[in-house]
Image 1 (tube, rainbow, N blue to C red):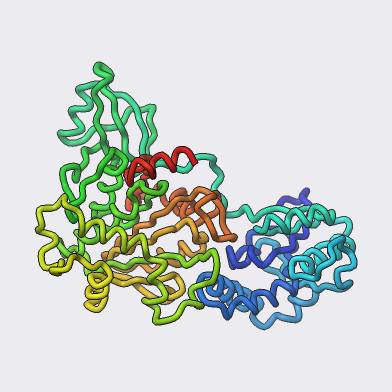
Image 2 (image 1 turned 30 degrees about the vertical axis):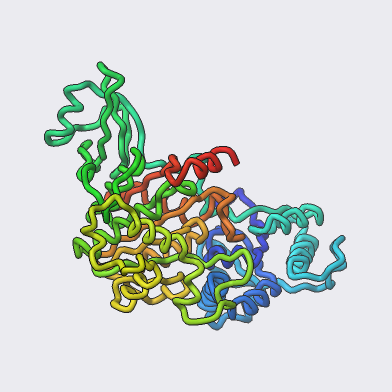
Length: 456
């Protein structure tokens, strides 16, 4: 903040702290208020199972570390934090009389705090920050400026796809297959970005190459298969290249339903672990973001609770094991006389330590080594949880993030198509040589699935 800028008052909603526990430190040079109602809601939510409970506990822990014995300042004039941030708790005083809404709710109490702060500090602009659209609308009705939490939102209308197109002369294309070829001077590429290169003298002819950070190189795994599966289209070939390459320990794949994200990742994981023995185990991870009851309401052990959430992995393995594409080498001793049973197959290898099925709740403190970790539905998690997951990476671990980051595929109220962890990690990691990303656009599941994806 420069000397000409005025301090502002920001009031934070509960969901902002759950989305990013350290959110308050980004309001540089401003006053940040946390209504006491928010503390009460976090206290209530921290006992819940699943992501909501974890995120609430993280927010509580972060606040506790920040206050660290300075509670009197927090309640009084406010805590002076780095970069000119002043953090203070706000109390409801008039019991909601300042609002045109009848019901006494947590949201209305937060609004009351905002109204009272605006009234008491009339010369300073007061802004309510919330990820709840309804609360932001109510704030506008109550005369309070409101906004979404924008700090970790992706500032682009189009997500990085992982590939591009351009033309080159035939002689330069030929050099790609010798010892590599520098890209054209007017073309900027990122490490592990793919290029569909058209022959300038013969536009009907094109090749696909991968940029290694220095030169355009031919695909190494173009003629390979994994667990009997071969890529079906150009985008899948690109994703397959990254999945198979051990020098790329982080791969993200986005795409709509039926584009092949999960089956590609699962096939490569099975091949790398059970055939090539390049890794010791496969860890399947999925966020438990329900439309109804959370994971804690389901009976049974951790594995039994997670089973309803892991349908995509079970379906992928079932399809791979039931496919006739393979001659049978990969299926030997994996079927019974009565046919293949996917649940039994997974349970057998889980007991041997080859498969792990986890949710984010159980990842804190772990170090995952010598494993392939597949994180499905990654559009449901916050950037904070992405960091938690990737900082679990130990030696010889490969992490694969899958998901569809469009708004109609997100059930978590804390994120949207611009702020979810999947788009965040794609944009933040795309410049590094050990990461790669591909967007799958073609639907290969069935003609009906393809029609639904395009038409509905």
